Image 1 (spheres, rainbow, N blue to C red):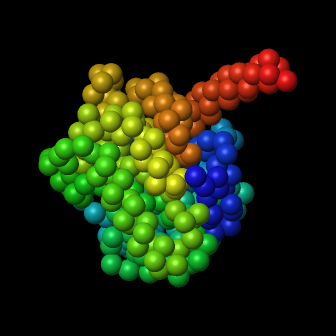
Image 2: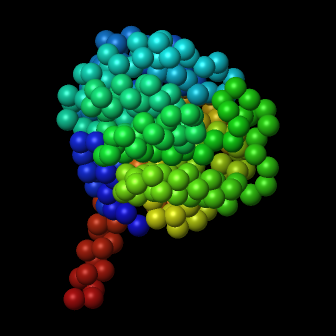
Length: 287
């Protein structure tokens, strides 16, 4: 299993879990739509997440919530590029959440470190764009169907082997184009064309995805499956989101993509303290 993630400007150490803070520069995000739609508010949010302890910032200009129509290229560029220009000066890796090759290209030219693509580079020209930037990190996500209809007809059967096979094939294609596997991370795509049961199966059996040998990113934050099992509306899902992130890390996730950075960092500190104490006691009892 790789213990680092190679990105444009940084080699991210994965020996400890990393927290990716979400910055939605959109008016219609499912969880915080409109709060950070302006460049000024988005940059203030980036700085807030940095202070709270985020290790990576993930900036997106198009909502992928079910049923959302695509955003025109020019509009997405106008949303994200001004934020990216300042975000890349903050001293931590910056990810661009997009599936459009032209957005990828311009973001990488500005200095973005990671391409986070819900389509796993299946749009024409996307793979060639990341291959032409030989250091950028790549996050490949599994999505069944497409955002407009994915929850109307979710995937059938056992999701775990299907997700594994898809991500393995996508990674193989990149490696055949010369991409270093240390640049690649997998995201099982919680909530993207999957039932509640399939989402939780992907969490419970997450170790099966780790068998691929790639870094694993888990994105449970405020997802509808958490609302389904708790009955909580999206703006009250902080506690279950932190719980899901912690469970994902306990099951081997290297990166968790979250809205609630401060609370997730605090939970991970508790986990780290427990493991450190247990390790020290084991060493003392077995000198």
